[in-house]
Length: 254
Image 1: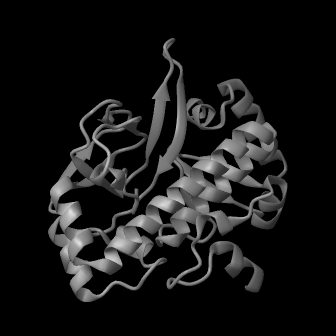
Image 2: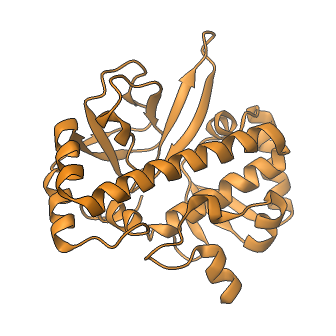
């Protein structure tokens, strides 16, 4: 996994909304002192837990999920470096979903009281936090469309484009390659597909020379083609602020 010191990915993400002052950054760093490390496939937050802190993903991949009565899991969102697991703890009392790790993960924990203090004292941070929450909602809407109206091939292509764009936005891509530490079963949980169907789609993508997924690394060989087949439009990610153009925009102008 990528090594990034402190909360640089979070700051880089938030600055797609507003440039943060040195004072904003120091205030944010001051409340992110407590860091936990969790192994892959462990539980960070359980549905029903008291909402006491904001967990910030520093390294690794995690996911939001809901469990059905029969044990089936529906993944409802990916959490990548720079993501805050739930700033809503400042308002809501209990978690309405669970969060689990997909890889080795390092998280910084911001107590509820500290998050309240930040938003009261640092208006740029408050605006950036709510921007981040609105982007999460936008992504959630796109996931509903993805599993509800796209073919299996389109779903996977769309997810790959989204992950690449989100990692690129915080400086965590290498050329046309990024981390993707999800098993085929976990891809199925995210896309509402069986592991067998996931395997079939991955083989088709490799055959068409669109992507390679090996050793937890995703390489996109033909981004325009992958984007077109997915009907992917990155505007729902709202990475159109101070940190410059998206990967899609760079590709178009490169």
